Image (cartoon, rainbow, N blue to C red; front, side, top):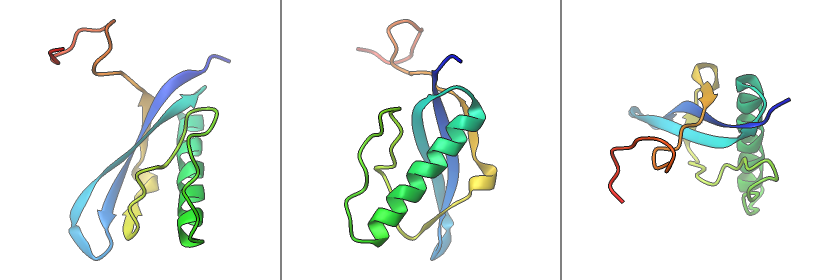
Length: 100
């Protein structure tokens, strides 16, 4: 089992204004896209539960997953979520349009 860095993109919308929408991005280590999607959902659920209980959102987990950018009032569209390998846009090992 080879662990790699994954990105999970979850469409979101503001529950009070459906015209406001975006994507919540999670990143972390997993062995497959399905495992990445599961971990993203787990850390989101834990962050939401902590927020509702008035507690601090859990910090980064040992496998690097976290949900620090929680947006209360926004709805996550989990059925439309996409998971794939993460590609660092500023990696020194890949060509990039970023000037350093």
